[in-house]
Structures are given as structure tokens and as C-alpha cells.
Length: 256
Ligand SMILES: Nc1ncnc2c1ncn2[C@@H]1O[C@H](COP(=O)(O)OP(=O)(O)OP(=O)(O)O)[C@@H](O)[C@H]1O
Ligand SMILES: [Mg+2]
Image (cartoon, rainbow, N blue to C red; front, top):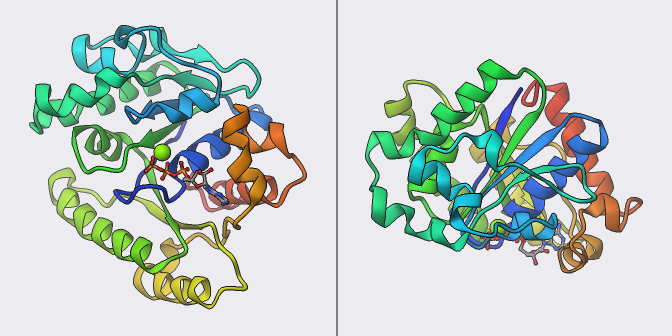
């Protein structure tokens, strides 16, 4: 069982697209993913066809009353992904619970209990674009962190900032956070995209995924149809890219 968090504090870089379609790629292989929607925007759950009726039916109840994660999983109707949905109440977590160690360790404790109870399945966490209690929970809980960055200069600046944030967190965690930087919306015809790839390789070395996620219209369309890329356009470039990403992450043990 591997816990993967998908985080970048920069907005709109492909976090939700990556969390959703990596989960869908796992589901197609019968690997029983559970997606945790840790973003109050609640887009991961929504695209997968799941919304929470109340805050208590969402991941918010973990923060509010330590509700066991298993109780909040709902099955996405068609994608094969189990979803722990978000709810707008989640946006109160920072203000209510602060950034103390107990508040940022809650998801970690719950997922460690899941690990003890069950060996199968993988957990994919979609984060919001902020370094706050929610994203820190995901980073503390994960076995591996994927940092998606769209292939532009501001995105790479954001990723370099994350590298510094992680180095500070690692002093608290007393371990290195295993991570992969993933270029998304990549258009090889653009010089800027090729330049960004070179900068990423120089900054992050072997932590850059060899798989590049191409700019792909089917990936942009599928959220409006409430579908994963494999349901919407299984033969598209986007579907091939996310399947190749899973191959790569499994081959190098990032997902075990
Ligand atoms: N490879 C791609 N090709 C084309 N469009 C893409 C691709 N990846 C993501 N998109 C589109 O870009 C937009 C932003 O993607 P996404 O919602 O995954 O980013 P995000 O990092 O989760 O954003 P936020 O920070 O708001 O949570 C969406 O409209 C999505 O459909
Ligand atoms: Mg998102």
C-alpha cells in the first residue's frame, strides 16, 4: 500500500488532473485506489461523480471528530476509484485547528492505521494550492509526493520554492520526502517547454519523471463530462501518458 500526495502551491498546474487519472490508471489494473480530495474546491470528487452531502460525510470529519477514513469512502460510479470527498467546510480547518503538530499529523495517523489493517490498495491525495494545514497533512502522511508543474517559467519557480519548503519540513520529519517532479501540459514544439524541462533536470536531477504529460484536448475536456481520461478518450495521448506515468512509478518502486 502506497500513499501518494499530489501537491504544488501554484494553482492550475494539473494536480487534480494527475490525482484523478493516476487513480484511474491504478483502478484499471485492479489496484483498488482510494482518492482523498483534500481541496475545499472539491473538484476531484466532483469529476469522479461523488459529492459529500455534509461536512460530516467528507474528509472534514477527520479533522472535526477523528472519523475513521473507511467510513467516509464512497465508490465512484464508473471509474473504479474509491473517493473520500471534500466539502467547503474544509476551508475552515486552518482557522480552527492551527498549524500545531497534532493538527498536521491527523491524516498520517489515520492512514497508518489503514496500513496496519490492510495491505492492498493505494491512496492518492489531491491537495489545494496553498501551504496550509491541509497540504502539510498530505506531505506528512505520504510515502511519495508528486509535484506537477505545467511547462512554463512561473511553474518551475513554484517548484523550486517547494523544494525549499520540503527541505524545511524534512528537518521536522527527520526523513527525506520521496518526490517526483512531473511536467504537465507539455508541448514539445514550444521552446519554452523544452527549456523548462532542462531547468527541471538541472534543479531536480533524477527526481524529474521521465514521462511527460502532453498538452491534450481530451484531458481538458474530460472534467466537464465527469469522466476520467480512460472513460472519456481511452486511446488519447492523455490516456497513454498517464498510463506510462504509472508504469514508470511502479517500475522504480515509487508506487509499490
Ligand atoms: N495535460 C493537459 N492538457 C490540457 N489541459 C490540461 C492538462 N492538464 C490539466 N489541464 C487543464 O488545466 C486546468 C487546470 O488543471 P487542474 O485542475 O488539474 O490543476 P490544479 O493544479 O488541480 O488546479 P488548482 O490549483 O486550482 O487545484 C483544468 O482545466 C484541466 O482540465
Ligand atoms: Mg486541483
